[in-house]
Structure formats: C-alpha cells, structure tokens
Length: 437
Ligand code: SF4
Ligand code: SF4
Image (cartoon, rainbow, N blue to C red; front, side, top):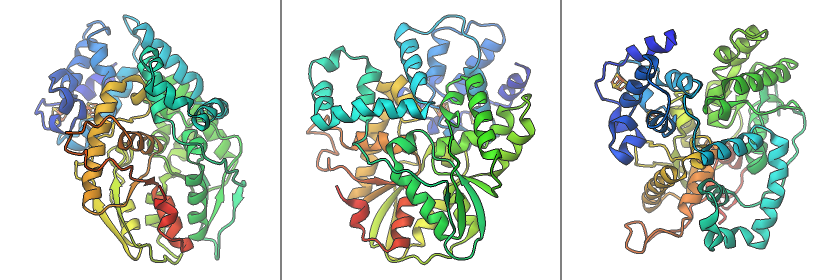
C-alpha cells in the first residue's frame, strides 16, 4: 500500500475537484466526492475496515476520471481507485451485488458467451417479450441490474465478419492492428467495419487478428486485477504475432486500459512485450489526426453534437482530435453537448451495478442532448459503445414526466461513432445513412 499512500498524500484537500464529480453533483455528500473518497482510502490504509459504509462510497465512484482532469495538484485518482478496488474486503458485498458481479463477469469478458447470450435477447426483442417484461409486473420482481440490462439492450444487428487483413487503398502509409472488442463486436459490428474502411482509405493495411479476446478493461476498472492482467497478457500474445506500427482502438474504455498494459502486466513474464504493446495503442481519432488525411471527404450536410466519453477525454486526453476530424468534413456543423462533459452514467458496468445513480445521470445527459437537438443537432457522436447504449436508452426513456422541461422533445436522437461519420463522408453517403430512425 506504500505507493497508494504516497498517491493519496498528494491530495491537498482543496476541493477543486468536487464540482466536476458526477456523484457529488447527484448527492452533495463529501464522502461521494473525490476528496472524500481519498480520505476514506487513507483511513483504510491506516487500519479502518474495508466494509460498509466505506465500501459503498467507493463502489459508487464511476471511475470517470473527471476529478483527474479537474485536480490542479495532479492527484492520480485513477491509480488510487484502481488500487483500492483490488483490496480484499473485510465484509462481503450484499448477495445481490455479488450475484450481479458474478453474472456480469461470467459473460462480458468472453466474446463467445456474449454472442450466445445475444441469441435469446434478440428473440425477446423480435417478439416484444423484452418490452412486456420491462413494462409489466414482472419488472418489479427482477433485480434492478437485470431491468437495466434489458433497458440498455440495443436492437438486433446483422453480424459482420471482417477479414484478417483489410489492405490499404492506394500507397501504404502504415500497418495497423485493430481491436474488435467484446461489446463493440457484438452490438456495434458496423462501427468496426467503418473503422477498418476509413483506416484502409487513409492508406493503412489493417490487421485484424483472429482469436482476440477481451482487453480486460471492465475487469481492471472493477478491481479484478488478476483477471485483467491475464486477459491483457492473452491480447498482447495475439497481437505480438503481428508486425504492426500501431494498435488502433475504437472503444474509449478499452483504449484507456490498453494504454496501461505496461503497469498491468508488470512482474509477469511478458512485461517487456506488454510495455511495447501499450506504447503502440492509439484511439482511432488520435491515430488518424496524427496520420493526416489523404482520402477525399465528400460533403455531409449534417449538424452533429459530440459527446466526450470519459475514458477518451479524461483518461486519454483525446478531446480535440475527434472534433477536428468531424469539423473537417465539408458541410458538417459541430455543436457541443452543453453539460461540460459530465459522465452519462455508463462507466463500464456501473449502469448494471449501480442502476439508479446511472439512470439519473443518463437522464441528465439526455436533457443536455435534447438541448443540443434544440440547437439543431440531428446526430449524436460518441466514441464508446457503453456511452452509446446508455444515452440511446436514456433518450428513449418514456418515463420523462409530462411537466418535465424536456418533455417537448422526447424524440430519440440517433447515435453514431466518429468512425461511422468519417466513413459516410469518405464513401459519399447521404446523411440519411446515419440519421435513419
Ligand atoms: S483530488 Fe486534487 S482537486 Fe481534489 S481535493 Fe485533492 S488536491 Fe484538491
Ligand atoms: S472518478 Fe468520477 S465519480 Fe469517481 S470520484 Fe472522480 S469524478 Fe467522482
């Protein structure tokens, strides 16, 4: 704990981080702020039990890293919360929390299991059984996490099988590996297809190794360090068989975890390979902005609002690149979601483990997106599959009361990934390819 103690001591208790913290915004409780949580961690390091209520305040943290951006003293809260979440508990979590965690981690880090689970889910969606369950009496009997999962589940999509190599169009400028991901591959295969196309259009050979597993992000951000480390080692091995200049990632949460692989696999036999791999990881917008465009952009007359995914903006510092890529598309107008980039409540599996808080944050984000729609936005752009699921579900929430300020505009705004917008422009597609409702 010595390292964590030093990190906690960097906090000078100024409180500048408090207004940026979504859970402090929700409840106004010091112990649900970054400063309060650092204080609690310090107490545990001095011998206090890691049990409720301390555990509850730490579990309620989204891991959104808005506090890292806000802190003038450079406190590395990301390392603190990851470290604290890996501590052994002095009291087990509630039965419902343990069951929820067991169910989530029996499925999410395994793309094949996620694929199997999607089959009955899609059958329920096609037959309308999911709506019957979420709106009927059965809903009240379901655990809150299960209700949240049904509410978040996206409509069925057609699977897309990508080849192992998508060759560069025109002269080759780089060879890149591409992560397909778990949630991205299963629920947003069109985002992976668009990512491969734009990279190829910009002169990259795109290597998509078979046998890629989970990157370990969800495990890392939930304190399952050993599991995360093992998944990281497997992924490093898979990409280690390729010779690529960069590993491109189109999911913010995955990219931020993969950039930490050097620390995650420290002490393991593959540490050197892990550090080399981490040094090659780039978010797709970050990579394309550095590479510079060669593919022609066709006009795309569309007003889009850009949503900052926390693990892209706060954890990776990638804010300007996606905006610059979008703004360079002829005819496209960019507007901001005017909530200062507050977390939408997705936060990995937070919306399944803390569904009430996540849902309130989702509602607030939906209000901010509706305000952007009132300013002309026709499409929301998000670079993280979790955010896309969360915001889409929140925008479609029929529970907005009639007297709610946003009740005049309940329409669901379509959500797309930055890669899909660039792809539509490069291919000369009409805006309707992105905004069909
Ligand atoms: S984390 Fe940073 S901003 Fe927050 S109280 Fe500590 S020093 Fe101040
Ligand atoms: S990571 Fe987010 S939720 Fe957690 S303390 Fe920091 S700002 Fe608050």
